[in-house]
Image 1 (spheres, rainbow, N blue to C red):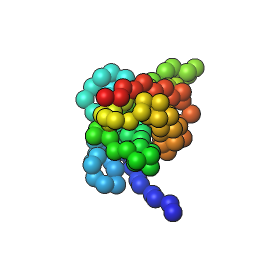
Image 2 (tube, rainbow, N blue to C red):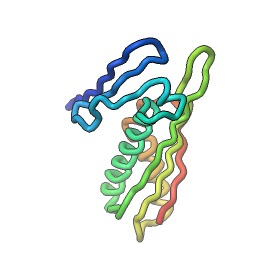
Image 3 (cartoon, rainbow, N blue to C red):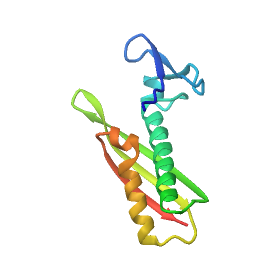
Image 4 (spheres, rainbow, N blue to C red):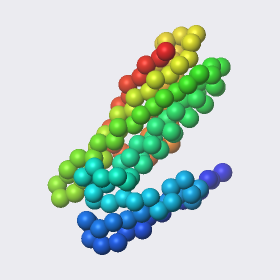
Amino acid sequence: MSIHKKGSAHWEGDIKGKGTVSTESGVLNQQPYGFNTRFEGQKGTNPEELIGAAHAACFSMALSLMLGNAGHKAESIDTTADVSLDKDGEGFTITKVALTSSVKLPGIDSAKFDEIIKQAKAGCPVSKLLKAEITLDYKLN
């Protein structure tokens, strides 16, 4: 089985030009992005923010699945992905993603939880996609 989802971008001008990003679902519809939203803190989105949201969402779903397979159901999973974009010669490279997750799941053995959450970090499809270093800090409540 293969699932296909689409995102698209429109760009005008040089590197300091402007663009929009859209998703097939319409959740993002011509959302502005550009040099100013990526490097100058202006309103709009950027590729790193979108990768962070995708990674946090994917990891949280993978953790939910793996906990369920072990007979556990989290009350909540809140994850942030901090994506680092660093200068690399003439260009830039995404060098690191720092996942931080807070999981509310009473009654699970902490050693078992440690094992499952580390498997989720390694096993989520977005983690598998990225070449960057991926770290994980988490709190079990």
